[in-house]
Length: 383
Image (tube, rainbow, N blue to C red):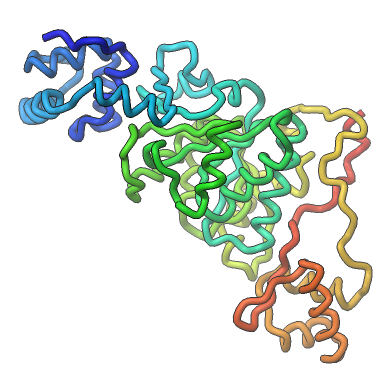
């Protein structure tokens, strides 16, 4: 049986959509067959290469699924969504990923493939990020992109989205950003990041190993984390609890010999528990974007505008309040106790910091909103 008017990319996308063809099985199939050949063999019930290792039962299920699939419809769906199919042996497949032992056999892409052409740093962290953590990730994303580095992350809520936003804010002439997601590229996930998803598809790059119409099921996200790690030259964890996807990504990076760095956090803040463990175990600290650029041996030219920011406050009571809130959310009573100032002075100071946007308040708890990175004091290293 000949599959009409279908090239290897559409055939590969069709194979990727067969329910019984796991990621490992798909790679094994495409290691021994061209996609069109594999799809034709399954459609007529012919055996695949014995090295693929399919059981009789699995082969039978794949035959039924291949016969029910319509490659022409798959091609129309891809074109309608603006999705490009990248095969591991094709020149447009990301070179940083091609040699990885767990590289996807097929990638789906929307946006500019050239976004992966330069230096690459992954910035990841918890979905349940603090305001300060989000500000830190935004600043890192912006400063790294301004320095010409591509920022890789996972488009999740919290740290991931903040890092993408920061890179986007640097402008399209900068390094840009790449998102790796755990669902099909026909729909954004999470929905709260829909506008960001569309911005990345338009001017940056979004990747997935899953075909269109694949739902964002929980098991897919740890799998996508290995891709984030493999694409990076350096991986930064901004905030992480004791367990979670960020530490899975860090482990995947370490397994690949990729440098892992972490932003220090207060021992009192649960969102920093994982990053502080990484630092304890030998990860290098990130105190400003230049720390990361130094690891990459990138020398930025004099006058490059990365992260030269003044201290937000000069008043000693305000400084004490902010320092306490950077350690974690605090009540007004706790701020009075830690600052040593009277309640009137603290209330007045807190009101001013809330108005200026240095603090946020939720249900009586006050939280610092500013980045935890220090002002860039490394100009002498850029000459």
